[in-house]
Length: 563
Image (cartoon, rainbow, N blue to C red; front, side, top):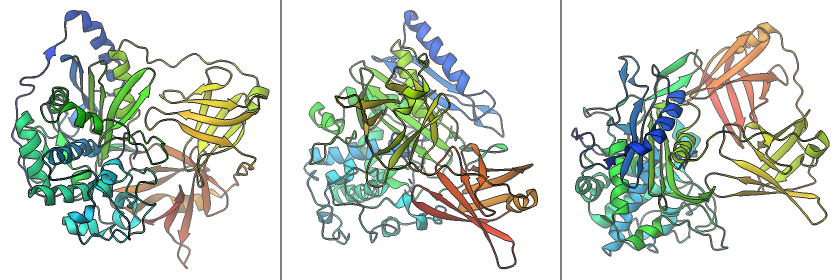
């Protein structure tokens, strides 16, 4: 359950009927557009191998289907290919349906944006703060997101009532005062689902079914319960060191209104057409949902009500992604161009992510290039002007370093990435949609760095006089000691770190992520060179290795050795 990338879980029951593959769908594209379809198809086939988990993709341009295709396998064990009418979990793409359900109730006078949530949930502890429906819609409530709580990680397999789910986070201290900041928040959408039930008198599931899915003919969209037989349901997979494996179990009582829906690319295209055709909401109300919310100080958040919004490379994108055990998804609208793209994948851990795939597919549909630009050669002394520590906020920095004639940037808790020169003060990242530029004052001194992100707006950082972190020095550890660390460590159900050894080298691979080398700082402390993280191994009094602790992004997560 994540934001348009980045970084949930529900209840009740629905047996979905098998609908027509694309009844009353947009018309097929004319022959003149075939070259676009061919370019998009060639790109997608280069990403999703035929014998691995893959994706279903649809591209619709002004009501005409440019491409509608499946890539890879829906079931690896049985060798069943993905068809475009198959059903996927869509994770946080759920949020736009939750938001529209709220707008329907606003239109009927059953709900107001400035209603305090205690009007519907009188027992919810607001810590003396005024938390409104709009705060929930826009991720500005300050409520702590339950999917980031260590205590939630151990409960992912448990069936919880809505009250129990809310109980996981309701007594947590708030991250900030409501409306003060923006922080992506699954708890907010869980509470929004509870508010919708109180305001409508229907369950969340029934509200969406009766008010959205049934009227629009979205026969293969609904709450993603695991028990019912659902024709066309795709299996979810995640990448591990040895290859792909079945995704771990997640109780679907967990995502609820933040991420519990299943759908198809066909139904999502119907959904998009209905929004464009004002079949559910009048244009002014829908426009409010698809307009970025601004904080009281005027700072844009790049997020409306259930949609991320922003301008990039001359285009206006309205979009959202979803990530949930074994699945990743992305839907993207370019309303000015009449373009819609949906990518539903059952391959968690595959790069590029569906957000990058969807954006590149959109660019191809718009007739643009997706190739990396040529690299400009810059002298080391020019690169040195940019090295240093750039502060983003009180807890986050981006460190810029030079290694020979190459420049690297690394955000706190993040991956170390090479920044390739596009011009003297402009850089790009290979196979990425992000760009970076450096600011100078009137005297030519470098004063800041701007990361031009595809989503969420530009991220500004001010250059400081802070000393960069001391470069960590790796020490040699005896192979026999390294061998004692080899094994599998469970950080929470369904998420492990597998540690392997190759001679005098130690490697770690987290569920659904690439394998990275661990470098020894001492006999028990190891660090990663490409990611800002550290791993400490734990021994019992007898000297046996019993676990590890992962330190990353200000969090310390313990894992028990299980193999």
